[in-house]
Amino acid sequence: MSASALFLAACSDDADTTEDTTEDTADGSVSGEIELAYVSWDSEIASTNVIGQVLEDVGYDVNLVALDNAIMWEAVANDEADAMVSAWLPGTHESQFETYSEDMEHLGPNLEGAKIGLVVPEYMDVNSIADLTDEAGQTITGIEPGAGVVAAAEQAVNEDYDNLSDWNVQTSSSGAMMTQLGDAYDSEEEIIVTGWSPHWKFQSYDLKYLEDPEGSFGGEETIDTFVREGLEDDMPEAYQILDNFFWESADMEEIMLEMSEGADPEEAAANWIENNQDKVSEWTEGVVE
Image 1 (tube, rainbow, N blue to C red):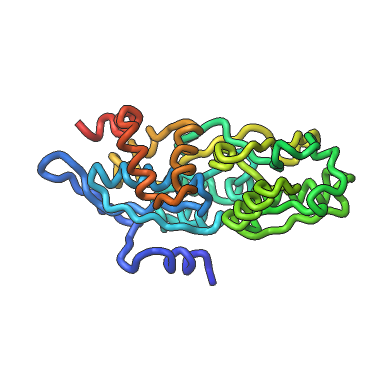
Image 2 (cartoon, rainbow, N blue to C red):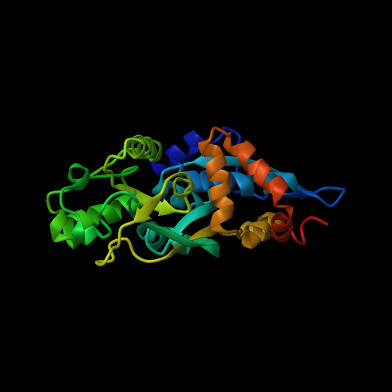
């Protein structure tokens, strides 16, 4: 199935992101339809639900569409989605950035200090990837195939670290990885997972990143916002809010932790918005009087 077909299958039948659907209403508010694409990581579920609700609060009809990494990028590049706030740069989404970024507009970071790497419980007696021997059955528990952190782990195993030549990266899903991590942690068993920050696991468990002397996982990353070409002309208010959107890791992790404890993403996002009106007001400045 083509990327376009996969995108359309994820959207409602009446969604239309390629034409100007924004209207100024009599009271000065805005209305219209806007499509936000995201990848189904807890971090991006949190951020997309927050910015989606902020856009709804000023009058937009917002549709959130969960997609695979590459399809998310392609959807914005092809004007099938209006925006995404889920681009991890420069490492995690490097290949997607190189392929699609020239066909969309880059609004810059919405969060700084992000990181990816191999993560272990603090009780494990190892601190560097270079010192790994036979821990956790020589298995790295990963997330979805094709994710940037999985690709980096595979590079570490297959190219960068001679001591990992007999190791394997076991892919699954973000949820399955977290279940395995929780089970192992509760039993104080060895486990090595592909990890990233921000993530609620660092608030729930005592974990550490393994040092990465070969640089397989790169350095500090940012999470960036991209919009389709022409959005500023079509939906200037939405464009301004998306351009203003910026928050901290602690903000995102607060929502993610609430989600991990059973809250619906919409509920967790709404709670954060209610408790952080000062930040939200900065994003909507000039749009909401």
